[in-house]
Structures are given as C-alpha cells and as structure tokens.
Amino acid sequence: ILYLTGANGQKRTLAILGFQPLKNNVLAGYGQTSRAGALLAIEDINNRTDILGDYNLQIIFKNTEYKPWKASYEFYQAVYKPPTKVAIFGPLTSYCAETISSVSRYYNLVSVANGVTSPKLLNRRLYPYLFTTAVTEITYSPIRIQFLKKFKWHKISVLYYRDSLYTSIAEAFIANVRADPDMTLITAETYFSDPSIAIRRLKDKGSKIVAIFATEQLFINIFCEAHKNGMNGPEYAWFTTYLLNNNWWDRALKKINVSCSLDQIVNTMNGYFTFGGNPLTTSTNTISRLTPLQYESRIKAFAPGLIRLGGADVIAYDSMWTLAIALNKTETSLKASGKSISDFNYTDKATRTLLFNNIHSTSFEGISGHVGFVNGSRLKDIEILQFQATNGTRTIKPVAKFKASTLSISNYKAKILWKGGYIPTDTVIIIESKVEISTAAFAIMATLAVLGCILCYLSIIAFGINDSQIPLSSICNLQVWLLSLGFSIGFGSLLAKTWRLIKDHQLISVTAFILAINAIYLAIWMIVAPFRADKFLIGQ
Image (cartoon, rainbow, N blue to C red; front, side, top):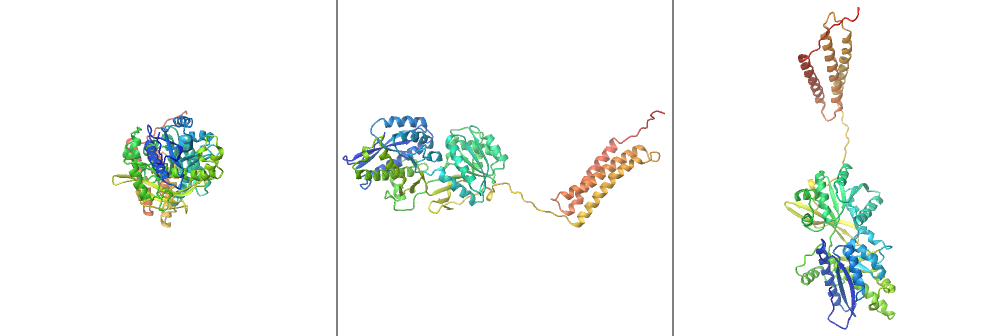
C-alpha cells in the first residue's frame, strides 16, 4: 500500500483505490509504468493550491496479477477497510475491469481506467460508472477502416481468439465493416487453442488483408501457422491489436514453444500494422503546466531506472488529473450546499452522480493530448505503426497519424515499407484479355482440322477394302494409322488455336509436334507388335 500526502498536515485526505498488475504476471511492466505515472500526478496535484486545495490525494494500489478473481478479492478487501475510497483508478486491463466495474457500481464508486479498450465495457447498462482514458475499440474500428480505404482495400478477413475480450473487440470491428457499404467481409474465423485450421480457411477463401485480434503470445502461433501455409509473401497485409513495443516477439517466444524459427516468424509478420501509441501533445498549455519535454524530465527523475512500456505512464498521469479535476468540481458543488466530498460513503448516490457528471464533461489538454469522453470512451490522436524488418534491424515505427480534431489520417514520421516494393491488393486480380489470331493462321488451322476429319472418315472406308487384293493385316494397320493421325491433326489444330498464349507462327509447330509424337508411337508399335490377320471358317 502506497500513500502520498502533502507537507501540510492540516489538509484532509482523499483516498483513491488503484488496481494495476504490479507483479507475478506478463503485464507487470505495464502496471509498474502506470503506477509511476499515477504517483507523479498525485505529487503534482498535491502541490497545487487551485485544485483540491483543502485535500491531499492518496492512492492505495492493489496488485491484480492480471487475474479477475484476484482483482475481485482485492476490491472487497479494500472497501471493507478504512479509509473510505472516493473513486477508482484502473484497472489497466479489460479483463479485470469487467470484474471490478460490475461490483463497484453497488458501492457508488466511479472508475477511471487507463488501459481498458473493450467496447463491451462501455455498455452503460452493465458498467454504468466506468470511464477509460485509453482509446477503445469503438474509436479504433472506424480508424482502421479509414486506413484500409487509404490503400483501396475494401475486402478484409478477420481472425480472433475466442474469449470474451477479443470476441467483443472483433465483433465491434466486424459490425463497422458490415455497416460500411464500401467494405466487404470475406470471412471471420475464430479459434481457441490451435489457429492452424482457421489460418487454412483464411487462405482457402482468398484472404489477403487480415485483421487479427489476440494476445501477444498468441500472435507468435498465428504467424508461425501463416508461414507454414505460405501466407508470408508481399501479397499479404496484417493488422494487429496491440504489439506496439519493440522486441515483444522475444518476450513471447520465451513463454511459448512453436515449430517455426524467429526468422520465419519475422519474415511472415514483416510489415504488419497496429494502432495505438501515445503521441504526446504539441500544446504548451496543459492542465499540469508541463510541456512534454518537462514531463519527460520529471518522470525520469521521479522513477529513475523505470523501463517505460507503451507510454502507459502518460495515460496514467492524465487519468489521475481527470479524477482530480472532477473531484475538485464536485467539491465546489457540494460546498454550495454545505457538504463536502470527504463526507462520501458507499451509499452516497448524490456525490457519485456529481462526480460521474463532472468526469463526463471533463475537457482539458493533457500530456497525452486532449482528454474528453463520449459515452465513457476517449477520442484522441492515434498513431498508426508498422513493424519493419530491414537490414538486420527489427523495429516498430509510427508511419501515420489519425488527427481527432479533423478525423483524418496523414503520413507521419517514418515511411511505410512494402514487401516486394508494391502495395498488395485485397483480392486476387484476374485480368481478362481477348487474343485474336490472324485470318491466314485461322485458314491454315481450319484446313488442318478438316484434313484430320477426312483421315478419320477414311479409316472407316478402309473397312470395305477387299482383302483379296491387299493383305488383311495391312488393312488393319492402315485403319489405326488413319484414325490416329487424323485425330492428331484435327484435334491438335483445334487445341493449338484455342491455346491463346502462343503466337500465330507457333500454331503449326504445335500441331506438328502432336502429330510427330503420335507417329513415333505408332511406328514403334508397328515394329514391335504389328497387327496380324488370321482367317477362320465358321460353319459350312
């Protein structure tokens, strides 16, 4: 448990309950990064006299371990122990937020999460008091579609891991695709343990542009299976959730065994796009009175040696400022009626409603950009990043940026690199062309076809030749030669004329080649085992 108080002991204390995955889980680095940002914000807020001047904020952190049951246990432990908490910071993940938000509503606690992206959690009927300062999939889905159209990709396939989080994210994206008249969903495949069958279905259905919704570790399996199925060429483009940080592949490979080498996986996923990032504000008029450069100096001095992941500290920093501003407005309103936010208890619906409305109407410039909410979801500038493996280096670079103020996408920082040097298409392109042969060539081939038919007819006439003048064995051999050569000339000429990939002067050559093969075969046959005629007298 961490407490931060100001130097002035006369100030009253407001306690905030914080949920982050701080240790014993794969997201502990993100949780620790978030904690540092939140604690720095607490320090800066407590040093201000114009915001909650009569109070010191405290934050009590609980380790969720990235486990919903653990988050639920820690929640009940916290609410039944003093001090009374006035709000919740976190959780970082949608998994834990689903659990916390479903029960905290009954204690009139409003939550400001710093990493929740699932659209499911924005359902106000189920999770009425949850806000998130991270950009949710409700925001990402239209941006993804806008980016797809930028490269004339109108057909897309979806692959997602079958659990509540990624199913809800994928379904939100699929709904946006189907609602757009310019977009076509080729297929939506799902899997639970082994993605091999789903990958084969994607390939069999001609998928070229694929959006994947899964965890970091699962992507290793997915790209390995894609490599096995030959989906690693320049004709494929991949879109992923998360995967924002360099060397995530090294971390994932330490936790999962796959039958592909790292080079094979990197070659397959090279060029994938992901959405997120946390571009810092360009404004110098932030609520904290810090510029991005000043913030960078502050966080490095505040948490020396901290490995900052995914800009989580910046989002956490602005999350705490969101709570502080809303609490300050709530205190002002309560004072007008002779009350105080320090009087809050878990049955106080009136204070909860005031705090909720004040967060909902929040609008300020934070270090991470503009902070404001629409139905609990944040709309802000978004970076579009690409994984680029070139010249022995592997890095994730920002290549485009979505501007929230103009709802537009523009090029940004690094250049987009395409495997093969060209933009892939969203489907197999079939180009039909009409190839004509010259009149002279047509006349020759038609003549050969007629000649072939004549020879076939002559083979029938040969049945009527009198064997008293010509040996019967010779007649039998003649019939085979006439029929075989006639068919070769007639069919060969038609085949050559139909096969439009050759030029006019090659038509006769093809027919002659077919005729020669058949003639050689017949000659060998007649030499090795010619027909022999025997006469038998039947009856009288």
